Image: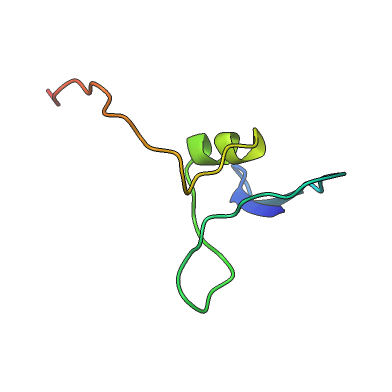
Length: 65
Protein backbone atom coordinates (compact mmCIF):
# COMPACT_ATOMS: atom_id res chain seq x y z
CA UNK A 1 0.00 0.00 0.00
CA UNK A 2 1.29 3.44 -0.88
CA UNK A 3 -0.24 6.66 0.41
CA UNK A 4 0.50 10.07 -1.05
CA UNK A 5 -0.40 13.02 1.17
CA UNK A 6 0.30 16.72 1.67
CA UNK A 7 2.64 17.38 4.60
CA UNK A 8 2.62 21.15 5.37
CA UNK A 9 5.33 22.10 2.84
CA UNK A 10 5.14 19.38 0.20
CA UNK A 11 3.89 15.96 -0.77
CA UNK A 12 5.03 12.90 1.17
CA UNK A 13 4.66 9.21 0.36
CA UNK A 14 4.16 6.43 2.88
CA UNK A 15 4.41 2.72 2.08
CA UNK A 16 3.57 -0.44 4.01
CA UNK A 17 3.86 -4.08 3.00
CA UNK A 18 2.32 -6.96 4.93
CA UNK A 19 4.34 -10.06 5.80
CA UNK A 20 1.22 -12.22 5.48
CA UNK A 21 -2.37 -11.65 4.43
CA UNK A 22 -3.69 -8.78 2.36
CA UNK A 23 -5.55 -5.51 2.60
CA UNK A 24 -9.17 -5.41 1.46
CA UNK A 25 -9.05 -2.23 -0.58
CA UNK A 26 -12.41 -0.57 -1.27
CA UNK A 27 -13.16 -0.07 -4.94
CA UNK A 28 -12.77 3.43 -6.34
CA UNK A 29 -13.89 4.78 -9.67
CA UNK A 30 -14.22 2.30 -12.51
CA UNK A 31 -10.98 2.16 -14.52
CA UNK A 32 -8.98 3.99 -11.85
CA UNK A 33 -6.39 2.55 -9.47
CA UNK A 34 -6.66 5.40 -6.96
CA UNK A 35 -9.24 6.75 -4.54
CA UNK A 36 -9.51 9.08 -1.56
CA UNK A 37 -10.24 8.03 2.01
CA UNK A 38 -10.58 9.75 5.36
CA UNK A 39 -8.09 9.45 8.20
CA UNK A 40 -10.59 7.26 10.07
CA UNK A 41 -11.00 4.93 7.08
CA UNK A 42 -7.23 4.64 6.70
CA UNK A 43 -6.85 3.73 10.37
CA UNK A 44 -9.54 1.07 10.09
CA UNK A 45 -7.97 -0.36 6.93
CA UNK A 46 -4.52 -0.58 8.53
CA UNK A 47 -6.10 -2.22 11.60
CA UNK A 48 -7.46 -5.01 9.40
CA UNK A 49 -11.10 -3.92 9.15
CA UNK A 50 -12.87 -4.70 5.86
CA UNK A 51 -14.41 -1.35 4.91
CA UNK A 52 -16.83 -2.91 2.43
CA UNK A 53 -18.67 -4.72 5.24
CA UNK A 54 -18.25 -2.07 7.94
CA UNK A 55 -21.24 0.13 8.62
CA UNK A 56 -21.06 3.70 9.83
CA UNK A 57 -23.34 4.52 12.75
CA UNK A 58 -24.93 7.90 13.13
CA UNK A 59 -22.97 10.21 15.40
CA UNK A 60 -24.18 13.30 17.19
CA UNK A 61 -23.08 16.50 15.55
CA UNK A 62 -23.69 19.81 17.26
CA UNK A 63 -25.61 22.21 15.03
CA UNK A 64 -23.49 25.01 13.55
CA UNK A 65 -23.59 28.31 15.40
